[in-house]
Image 1 (tube, rainbow, N blue to C red):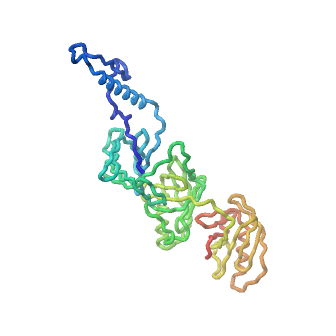
Image 2 (spheres, rainbow, N blue to C red):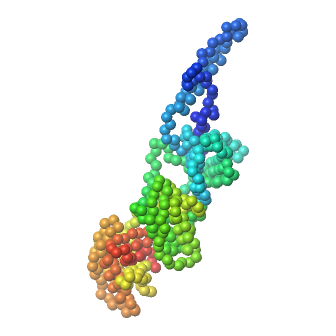
Image 3 (cartoon, rainbow, N blue to C red):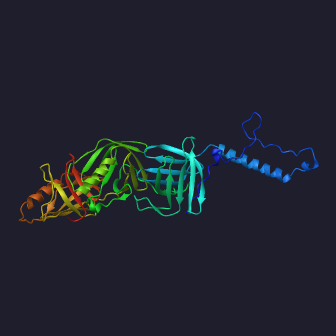
Length: 415
């Protein structure tokens, strides 16, 4: 897919020189008169007069067009990469804009040439400020993966900066003006699941059973970073998020999970840039690799059989089910049903958003002989009756009571 980049004529580098009327600041079309001496010279070529006149008119039209008030320039092509984060936006009728994570934006003007031998194009430009060396972008029409998503982009890029650095990345074509782009998520609200760190896609199978997630809501951020839960505060300013120090649980996990957690929490420090494209979020720290996330589907409480992994025993502790027992829970049509380790149960419930109220349960009347099984059943059902709020993050159900203590946690897979 060839994407032709516009030449920047309005910087004056490609405009013909027009004569100026004396004392005026606008170009004037010089009236061309045939010379009065000599028969041969008197026969001034009328066609040459017409050519000169046409050139002057064309130049005047172009100059007037460039002098019109500029509308917001739209990007024809956006090239980008990670480690470090960078982007190069080729603007229609405007300067090309380079953005780096470690410095502000720099605008360039230049033009494209075709390199037939290499079957690629080269765009060369210099800063509009007049200070700095030449930037060269080599663009090839070939499928390109950004390493952080499943999207295949139509153009690959190599960008040589004036300071000698070479960046490699992909280019995407923004939606054309008038087209309706896919709606983007907002930062706040969705639960975001980590999919990649830098160019490395995340392999959760070898690190942690539970996906890494983060959620932003009204100045509060919380999530799961690979081993522990975390929470903290944040503020927003444009495309930047400033994190307050994070707090959280202090569990120890296997080394791969701890390494993952260190990378995640290390990126959520200080001020970071963020970008949202559809259902994808990228967090770009000042140092280190970018984190790529994907918005999780809207959480669903009903229609799932939840297998309890921990519940509040009523003594300010969350404990796991006894070996050989499976505590289950499902919600459907105003009724919570499940198995409490020995007996089946059912209890009416109501929910409004993430708020929930569970009524008194009724159970079958078996008596199980296993040590602690009946006590576990009582404690589990007592805890369930205290539920006031639920959430689903990374496929995990988390239920809390009014004072913030956890009622239970569960997942949708059998233990």
